[in-house]
Image: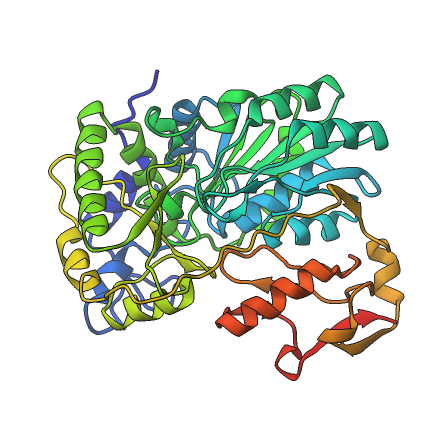
Length: 465
C-alpha cells in the first residue's frame, strides 16, 4: 500500500517554483513574467519537461510515481493521466482494443467521442438501445435481455462499450453485463466519465472497475477537484494489451502536456484517496440541508443513485426556462433538458464551505407558476440497430439536404447533438426515425442548443442521396 498522502508531481512543481529560476524555455509567458494580473501566479506552474519534472510520454520520476499512486488507489492493472479529457481516453481505448472491421456493441446513449472513436477505428458498430429511467425522464443503461439478443445475432462481437453512470447519475446492473460479455469473449470498455469519485464507497455507487471492466475512462475534472480536461484511464484486467493502449495515448495526447492539469490530477487522486468517513458524513449533512431548503422553496428534487447529482424542477417552467432564470441570478446549472436542470454538487470535505445558502436565497426568488411540463418519454421500439452503410462507404456517398418534415426513413449524413449532454439524436449512417424527429422538434421549440446540424436553422438536415 503506497502513501496516498504524497503528491509527487505537485511536490516537484513546487520545488521547481521555489528555485526562482530564469526561463529561457517554452512556454512563452516565461513563468508568468510576461502576464499581468492575478493569472500570473498560476502560470508559474505552467512549465515544460524540465529537470525534476519528468515526461508524461516517458515517465521515470514524479509523473511515474504519481501514476503508480493512481493505480494503487483505483486498484487497476495500470492507470494513466489524461490531459486531453476523457475524449482522448475514449479514443485510445477503442483504438487500443478494437481492430478494423470488428463488430462492436455500443450503448446508444453514448458520448459523441465514442462515436468518433468507432469511426477512427473503422469498426462495425451495433447500437444497443437503453431502457428508460422514468424518474429522471432520461435514458438509463441497456438490459441484460438486449445484450443476450445481440450476442445471438452477432456471436463474433469483440467489444461492448458502455456508459456508466449516465450524465444524470443513473446506474444499472453493469456487473451482469460484464460477466455475460466475458463469458462470450467480449471485452468491456466503459466511459465512466461521471464516476471518478465512486472509489469513495457508500453512499456512492460502485465503479465498473470493481465489477471487472477491462478499460475504464473517468473525467476527474467532472466531480473531483481537477482542472478541466484532466481525466484518468484505467486498464482493469490482464485481458488488455497495455502496450497498445500506451501506443495510442502517445499518438493522441499532446506532446506538450499541461503541467497544471497533471498537477491537478495528482492532487485530485490525493483528495479522493484521503476522503474519510467523517468527510462523507459532513457532505451528506450539507446536502441534506440544501435539499430541505430547495423543497421548502417549492422545488421538486429528483435524486439519483449518485448523491452528487440532483435533478431540479419547478412547476410552470421547462428545464431551459428554469436554467435561464437561475443564470439571471448567477446560479449556474450543469445542463437543462425539457423538464429539469441538473446540479452537480461539490464533494466537500469536513470543515470546507460552499455557498449553498447564497444559492438558496437566489432560488427562492423564483416562484412556481401555473401549469406543468408534460413528461413525454420516447422509448426506442428497436433495441438493436446497425448503420446502413460502413464508414468507408459513407466517405464516398453523395449527400443532399432535405426538410426536417421529409427525412423520416432517410439515412442521416450528419451528426446532430443536443449539447449537453452530448448524446446524438442521430448519427451518420443511421436511419432517421420518426421519434428522433419528434424529439428534435420538441427540443428546438424549447430552446435547446445543438452541435452539428449546419442548416438546422433553415429547417434542413443532411442526408445520403
